[in-house]
Structure formats: C-alpha cells, structure tokens
Length: 269
Image (cartoon, rainbow, N blue to C red; front, side, top):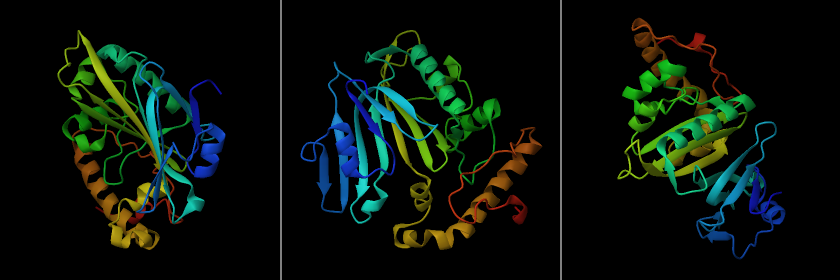
C-alpha cells in the first residue's frame, strides 16, 4: 500500500486490523469499560493519510484523511469492527473554493454509483430520484441530499452548513457528511470543509430503528416495523404523484432480514 495508508473492511477483527496496518494496541486502541473498543489514528495536517475501504467490487479510497475511528463491541468479538468513521478534507489544502468542493464530491458520488453503490432511501420516505428528489429534499431535509442528483453551485450553497448523503452496497451503508465554516459562505471566495465517511452494516442500521430495550428482538419485530414505515411511504407517494412527481418503483430497499423484501403489494396506505 501507499505510505500513510490504512486499509479497513467492516467486520474484520480488531486484532487483524491492527496487524494488517502495523498499528499498536497500546497507541491506537481506546478500550472503554462499557464494552466498546475504539480503533483510532490521527495524521498531521501537513502529512494527511489515505483510507482504503475494502468491500469487494464496491471498495474505494478516501484521500486527505485527518483521522478515523472504528468501533468494536467486546461482547460480540466475532462481529469485528462494525462501524468505521473517517474524517477528511475534500482537497489537500484546508482552504478550497466552494465550486471545487462541489465538483470533487459530485465526481466522488458518481464514481461510487458506477461501482454499484445505490442511493439509500428510508422506508418511510418516497422513492424519488434525480432532480425530483432534490425538489422534495429542498422542502424536507430529513430526506437526505439525493446521491443521484448533480448539484449546481447555487444548490450546493443552499445546503447550508451541514449536508448528508446516504448510500448502500450489499450489507454495508455509507453516510457522507460535510460540515463547513458558516462564516465563509461567499461562493466567490474560499471556504473550509470537514467531511466524514461513516460506514456500518445494514444490520446495525436496522437495529437503530428500535429502542435499546427491544433491540435484541429486532428480527421478530422487523416485518411489522417496515410495514408501518411503508404505509407512510405510500401515503407520501400518493400525494406527490397527484402533484406530478414520478415514483421510482424500481428502487430496491436493502435486503437486511430473511423476510425482505417486505412487498408493497401486501400494504395499503
């Protein structure tokens, strides 16, 4: 691997992660009494790192990395590192024009989609894509910034200080976020951006739909939970269709549970 490169695969054991990357259990692991091990490392601003994500044909590379954190549940060591968060710049310099940041991320998202990463839409959100997805997002920020829409500079600036893009490939989800300096929002001047790339298993995401006291029973509760969400989705889609929106009925939700996909034909709004 290139110098300053760390390779990770969601689900690899902490021991293997350290060994493959020449990291130290003393310096790079924060062992918490609550039963979580955090695998972490930081690079200097003048000597940024690279993180290589291994996920079969969906693997990709994150440059200009400031640091990362991976989490491992010590009560379930066989599950390995179940989530991984990478903090990075969008270019080598901390100062970057807003348009350069926009173009760079749009190209990155396009490359991910070519590899097979798909936009991830919550079960209770309408199945929209492209420009129509952006129109809906502009008034419903909980939808998430559409990963299949190429933002104009005006739209990019309208995102405000924070933005999130959601994607998935097989059993892994990816959330790309940015946080930018709100005092440097002039589109004709340089801005400052911090990006995070958060990866986890789809099962971990599924458990997040349930409160902690019933989370261990998520598989027994899954079908009813998703049916409820999809009733919400269908109700929103019916309203949008009346307004002329096109619903992408070819969209596929991630396969997480043995009962998936929970068929829409079984549900009425």
